[in-house]
Image (cartoon, rainbow, N blue to C red; front, side):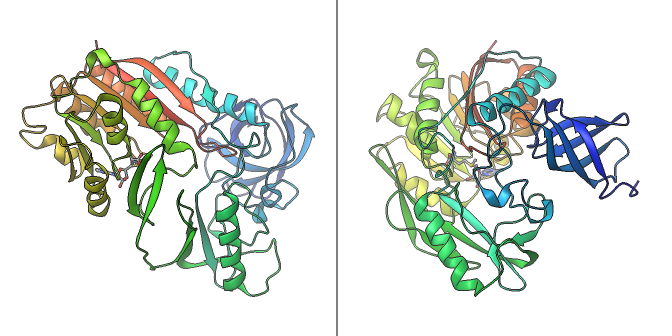
Length: 416
Ligand SMILES: C[S@@+](CC[C@H](N)C(=O)[O-])C[C@H]1O[C@@H](n2cnc3c(N)ncnc32)[C@H](O)[C@@H]1O
């Protein structure tokens, strides 16, 4: 091992893997290949040969192209650049949008089948916005290199690369970010990757109301307002909010539709777990009326403070700061257990996990709606839920992150 680093290999791409890379075989070993498409033959450079079972490689030349290959939506991330100077964060940008969604569907379907024995019919639905999947990012983080260059990281590294455009960002966010880059960087050679400078970063936030906000490392700003339909949400500029400009709206409707009204009890101890500033608790409230009872549970006290304010329209709504696992293991959770309750959960990428699933299973809510940004964590948790007497009754998937490999799913679970 270590002898093959930098070696050029010719690879036939057989499949898509979780994590935005494709699968090929070389000399009996699996190679995870970036910037390729299933069905292609590519020449790739080995970037990691440290493991016995698999290597990693980056495409440098396409020998037989897929009919789904397109010019990359972001030239800074294209294979026309050397791998060490390719911007990260748009790893599917060389694939036609409908086929990106098909590959994401395959990854989700494969995870559900392998890890949970489930074979639901599922497609990945496109969001409103440009058909080429650009102009959606309302949040962008750029990093500062030692020489002052401000830019995204090179794919799968912590090297900073200067870029001339940011097509995945909304036009307002892209302009603000590039302006910040020009101010900070002085005159640098575009396309050159440089080592990152500690943890210095610049966040550009484009709320749906007001001008973009640029927060340099350590800076704070007052709260911002995000509008979703007729409703407004206050939050800290640097706090969590769905990144795609239409994501909050799409998830609101998806969660509302994923709840079985026959199983919904407005007086039960309904929960919005990993609630952020209350977006999905409000979705439930808007679907089932002003008198419902719902508690939003969130680990970040700043977000909970805003959630209280954002949920003020519902007398029966509350927001608490707690880690979800601790909250669920507190005796008297939901004042008398969760019998008859509807639970929405929207955990971070790692998923809810064994302890949270076990605690929820023991509290026997009537139904759950699981919003997931990682198909493998979702599939693992669905298998765990099955062990606690919950079956999948419906699932939808959304292309909340076009031109990347990420996919969001909304799964409904009911008691068997
Ligand atoms: C994917 S976000 C969802 C937020 C909200 N549902 C929304 O759509 O705006 C996950 C949230 O869970 C919170 N969080 C992460 N781990 C947590 C934990 N163990 N307990 C409570 N909250 C947690 C994060 O602070 C973040 O606000």
